[in-house]
Image (cartoon, rainbow, N blue to C red; front, side, top):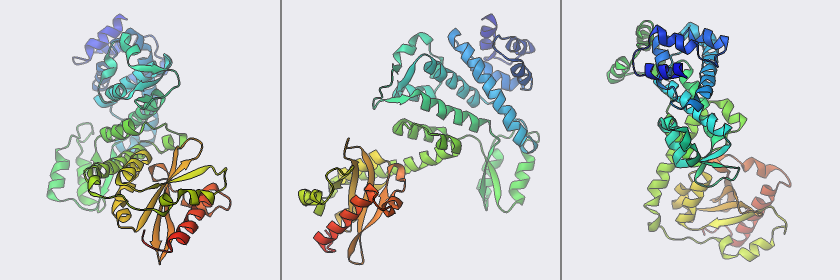
Length: 398
């Protein structure tokens, strides 16, 4: 382990040829890994040395992560080298590799979940440097999930996507026009990693009508806020969409969160509203098959709308004025077996009759198309709701 400690020290000073040789001699590197290491600059190697783990037990997983990183770099370079040059191992990228090392170690040691505050600290800061002896104090073993824990597997997927986004060539954003302030901001950004210092890129910005500009880093903090709150379990489709999916989800969640905070201060100003289903639950339930898999809960207070927004992660709270004014009625669709929320339905008055105008699942997943399927349980309960509501209210705004 003497070579490892030398590399740890090298991370705190300019890297020398001796340091590079020490890294190449480390047990655990394949021949391909050694060949790829030689393609890195001294600054890139220095970033990796800076993130060397202090704990001996983490060194083998760290070498595996470095080799995975180098394989990814070869893949990226083969697709984009002609346009952008060699990807650059930054301090952010090296830190992401270090965090992946810690997460994989936790997984290998049998941790399925980690307390959300601890996981957030691990992903946001260099908390992975803490002693291995303290690992037992930050996680939960077993398969039981609590509201204050995050799956280790999900955190690994998040950091893998972040690592890949950091490795990719600079992300280019398009805009039609730049004013003088924009151009000045672009020119003051750092392009030292480019062979020409970014001169060609800046000329392109001025000459191309649909201009492109460099966005230095992925928006990790916004994504981490969303990830920590929603605790997602990624499926293959979401992973396939890459970092762009996570940023889109994070941005949408932040927009909803702003709405939630805004209405939290206003809900006391709104009264409860009437709802025909809420007023006649027994009559309404008598019209459904006894073994129907869903049930409806009418939302008749501002707080109920806010709770639905937070659980279902959408913006139904913004319909508070329509509900208070009598123009819309909102229902939560629950699984009858366990009371889990399945969807949120909106009835609204159109041409004197109440109609189902929206049926959204979690994160605004569209479900209204399922009401066109004959015999589908959602079709049965939504058709029954609309017919009963119109028969009882006859188009009245209540």
